[in-house]
Length: 200
Image (cartoon, rainbow, N blue to C red; front, side):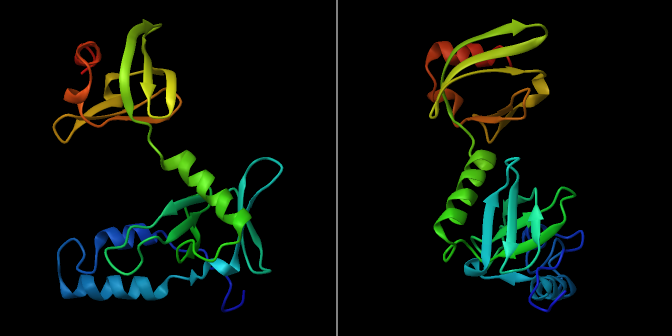
């Protein structure tokens, strides 16, 4: 492996290092030094050197220059506390980091479109604007809703898949793992609120 080749990372991802912050969870100088060492260790590459595509099985693949191609990867936005906003981490099936890309500026158009489509699919959470009905469906709650992405019909298996956060904000996950959000319960119409009240 050459010095410029992407190096699989250890168990600490850039997002984990970033979320710990320069001071770490305890705010100590040792934590800061560890964070700086972690940032220095990461194999950060420029987007112009990266190629992203889908193979015949619709798996996401990423390659650096003429190096080996990593197949079936998952992009994850990195959230550093400073300096690396917009960085994209690529993880393999074992959640091991194979490449960290410094933003998206400089990607070729096909690679950029492929990446944006995947990030949109994985991380965009539809907002529920109106609830038409919630009915029992063989032990699950079947939600019929209107979202900012159109009409949806989905099942929620367990009440634990519906969580109230930040007062009136509600997050829920359907039986297929798709996520939805009600930004403000009190902004819904009266019928929608009554239906939700019966589930929380």
